[in-house]
Length: 189
Image 1 (cartoon, one colour):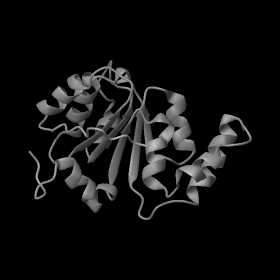
Image 2 (cartoon, rainbow, N blue to C red):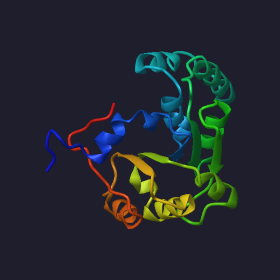
Image 3 (cartoon, one colour):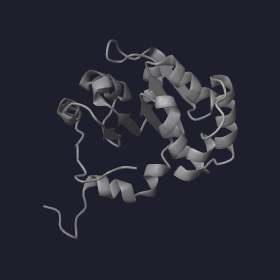
Image 4 (cartoon, rainbow, N blue to C red):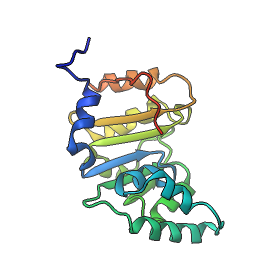
């Protein structure tokens, strides 16, 4: 039971300024760099929505417009954000728009990370996964954590939406010494 004197690990981490100032953050299924956009830039939802309302440029023009839009809103210092997705268009867009620093197009459900990705993962301190767990199983998480090479000082932030149970992934994380905490009743917007 948590009393006023204690906080969950999630709450403690959320209160630490170090969380935002991490050197290397890693987005799993980088989803067009949306996590990188949120972490590296100062932009509110209204401004972001207004940016995408109106004209519909082609994808190359959109990436250039987005690069300009986000460049004027960069945080300082901005964290290094690495992206991983099996969808090449998602990774390429995130790179073209400047929302991630490096990206890999790999399917870790099927095979181990490439040597280049494995090397990049060794410095990661926060893994962010926001999306449907049906797209990513415990196999991929096991491969990622094995490539990181350590579970101390490693955090995994998952926002699980509209998917089957997260239990299999939570069990895999536990096997690597990580604790899964759920935030009951929390709606992220």
